[in-house]
Amino acid sequence: MANTALITGASSGIGLEFAKIHAQKGGDMVLVARSADKLEALKQELENQFKIKVTVLPADLSKADSAAKIFEQTEAQGLKIDTLINNAGFGGHGLFHERELVDEQAMMQVNMLTLTDLTHFYLKGMVERNQGRILNVSSTASFMPGPLQAVYYATKAYVTSFSQAIAEEVKDNNITVTALCPGAVATGFVEAANLEGVEIFDKAKSPKSVAECGYQAMEKGDLVAFNESSLKFMLNWIVPLLPRRMVLKLSRQAMEKNG
Image (tube, rainbow, N blue to C red; front, side, top):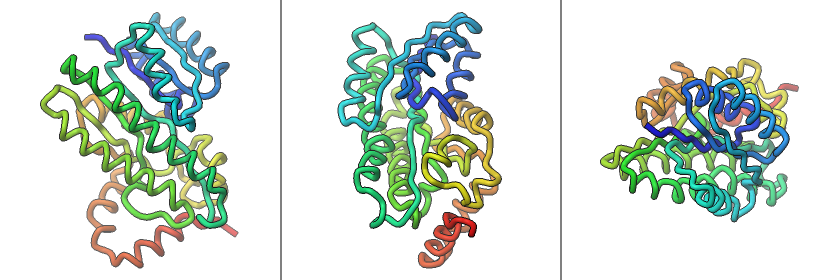
């Protein structure tokens, strides 16, 4: 069975680990990220070690036309994408009215709009071939509002909802759609989002463990995957029963910085 994967945000963190896992399984891939140098280095490493074919497509996913350009390039090269892993995303810490609006708009573009565009472009081919897998990296943040990360939490709520809806639509086409909802992960996300000093990241899980959880869930066709059973229980069975104001207070406390 053909197994070419397109992975966004593939140059570091969880995306890098997804690439390694897919390579170990003998799959070819298209790697997307902003850093051409990092992608080329990863391409050489994976091709030499696993004897697979890797295509690199440097792209800035905060640009509105980025998904269309990526799709055009894969089509021009005759690449059929069997597995789409929408991993790229970023956050940002602070009061919404004090943050730069352009940063929030870029976050919405990467986390929601480009993800949606890529899904739309590649899902059509999957439906035609009656085969495919999609893994969208969401977050446990998707299950509640997030004071001090208002836009980030909202974008992830979109990803989790969108993924499940699409999964239902294409379930009879031999296609699965999985939303991976990890808790805190030890990646460059923390520094990029100005989250140093937020206590929950002191016990962040490794990108490798999160990628393994997500990839396995995708293979099984799970709708929603959590990398921590305690978070799964809390978000599914405790949080929905709490008063909304209490949820907001607890959510804000989780994002406040030490000192």
